[in-house]
Length: 247
Image 1 (cartoon, helix red, strand yellow):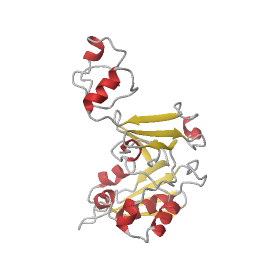
Image 2 (cartoon, helix red, strand yellow):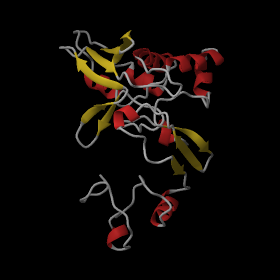
Image 3 (cartoon, one colour):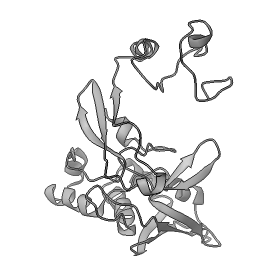
C-alpha cells in the first residue's frame, strides 16, 4: 500500500516520481517541474512543452522529451488505466528533440479536438518514467503486459526528491535523495530526511494516533475537526483557516 509514492491524481504528490507540471488547487494554475513551459497552437490540436534543462534522473542522466513520449506509449501499449483513459483524447506524444515534446489531440469528424481539457489534465497528473528503465523492465518480462504490471520494480529510477527506504504492511518510509536535481529549482533540499506513512487498521486508529501526537500530518476525514482545538485544546490546525475546514 504505497499510495503515498505512486498515486496519480489531479495534484499528484511529487515525492518519488514527478509530473511535467504541478497543479495548484487553490489558484487553478500550472507550475513547471520537469516541464518548463507549455503552449497550445491556435486550434488546440497540439500542446507543445519545453523540458526543464536542469531535470535529472536519480542515475544522473537528463530527463528528456523521449522519456515523456515513451511513458505515454507504454501506458497505451500495455493498457494501463491511464493509457485506456487518455488514449481517447490524446492521439500521440512525440519528442521533436531532446527538450521539446508535442501532445497531439485526437480529433472528431470535423477536425476539432475531442477534449483539449483532457490533454492539459495529463501534464500535472501522470508521472514521467525513464525510457531506458522502462525498456529494461520490458526486456526482462518479455514485453508481456501482465508480467510488466506485476514487476515490483524495486530497482526503479526516479526524478523526485525521495526514494524507497523501508516498507511492509504496516509502514512505508521514504528517504531523501541528497543528489536531487530540484535544488536548482527550489533553492534547497526538502527539510525532512525521512517521510514515514503508518498504515492504520481504520480511521479511528489513525485519529487516535493523530490526537496523541504520533502523526504530524493527517489527511483522513475527521468529523467536527474544529473540536480538536476548541474543546480538546490540542495543538492542531487545518490548512484552511476558516470553516468549512474539511473542503
